[in-house]
Length: 335
Image (cartoon, rainbow, N blue to C red; front, side):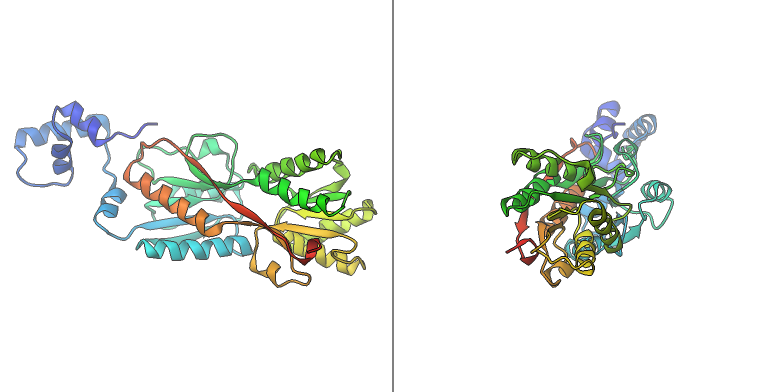
């Protein structure tokens, strides 16, 4: 659905954009007949002033909702803290909401029926499909974190999950490991993160002349340490010769290392481990956790830049940005 713009109203009323702006902002010195013609065009076209854009231009403080699946996840907690700091530098207020990845809560947050009305939304859904996120002309703009099926509906900022997973797996293979497992598949969710990281994992195996083995791919319900520990226990019970594991989050990796220690396996001597997210706990674990480190400050700035652009002009073409990452090699993979 295309947003009606000042230009559309101006063309309909046969006046300048400046005249429409003067009428919308209730400025004096507009001829009564001209004002009536512009107001009629506004009513006919269903034009709604972009209040957020006006506030942005006038330097007024905007309210932005940051809608996350989990606040107690270290990765999302670190991201949220960076959003709050970056928003403060723009003189914006950041309001944080948690959905627990539940479809009904995600829909309610996006519809604005829960919590304060926001001028813009930063949204990380787990259950909603991208086709549900399309915005009407009067709705607050949305910038989405992470990949979802479908393209072109809203701006989104993503990590190169395929490339990062391929790099992490290739690093384990380069260390001489040949039975490399993957922990973190989530086929029950509609987000693409798990599938894309699985694709990158498969690509690295195939490039090394190895065939993916379903027995080495362990799905999880959630991405926390207990899930990683349980997945590692399952893996050890069924695949005795596993010698490395790529975990789709650092929390899963920390749980997996706990299970390995409890089973008497050494890390990285018996099993090398690489995680994803570069959370603080991984830097201080024993051994320190090798991980994929996304550029979180860059991610936050790109999201807020997209939102600022969208607040001024809803009609911009949708965009997708990929943030850089690096492989942080530490002791858990043999550094």
